[in-house]
Image (cartoon, rainbow, N blue to C red):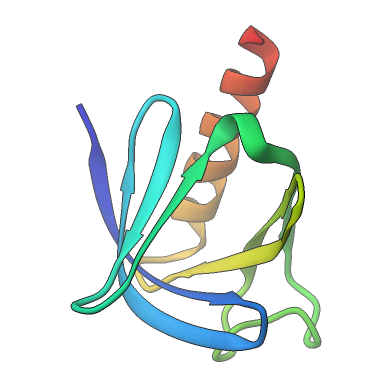
Length: 97
């Protein structure tokens, strides 16, 4: 079962908006023309960043450090509580490994 959120994300200097589907082992980001899959196994660190320099379109972000890939930042269009839900999901999965 997955949950869906409206988000904006940034990777390698480009920004996109669309939806995030949260599954038990990964996040999937989709726009009409782009699909990004983020398996939790490739996430080496995660943090919620609120500083002005870290924000995306003025919103706090969930910053994901990924093994062998550039960091990816996700901002929720549904409120900061979503970032905490997503962070908790990654943390629970990491602890289970």
